Length: 263
Ligand code: IPD
Ligand code: CA
Ligand code: CA
Ligand code: CA
Image (cartoon, rainbow, N blue to C red):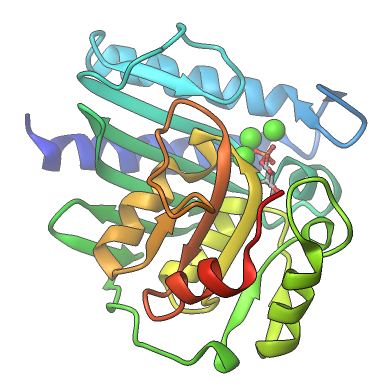
């Protein structure tokens, strides 16, 4: 399999999709809700996913595709080449703020992440990685993450996981927040993962993410030494939703051991 060629093709697809989104959304945006009032989807999420499916099938019709909006076939195994796609991560930011939304894509072969992309559509900034070859931010190689103390960390987390909730002992989370330097919440899992792999955040924690939120990001994580697991410390299976943490390797275990207590 020619990974360099697939990487080139993936990048071309992503830049083209980004341009289509930027060109379309100011005059043609239809917003709907999915599972509830805060779960938004637009015609552009769906059209972008379809665009990727058509492009990938034209490249190689045997490749399988898992996408958030379910426009492709049903996939229940990671055998062979599989693309995991979130056409727009941060749909609420997209609709409301017109920025801070991302295309994120992972390319896996037999369950192993080979290529990973996180693309800031408005800034046209690309974080990407090729398994075993390294990670880049646009044309600059990304550095391995440097160790730090938990007291120096800035962590991405939503307020929902720090206030009383049915997943976690939130008192422990409050203790974590009092220990670290600060928290951020950007409204896009892909953006928070991009920030952890590039050292702008030191961890990102979520109680529920889906394979498309993290597929691309976990490939980049491996190349810079970030550790991505569920909150039990196990690897994500990329077929089902799960809890999630990505962190600088010097604090991943400490956060799980001292501050995370699942109910
Ligand atoms: C969502 C965003 C959000 C995260 C949600 C995701 P979407 O993705 O990444 O930050 O908290 O869990 O579902 O729906 O905008 O692609
Ligand atoms: Ca969504
Ligand atoms: Ca998402
Ligand atoms: Ca999405």
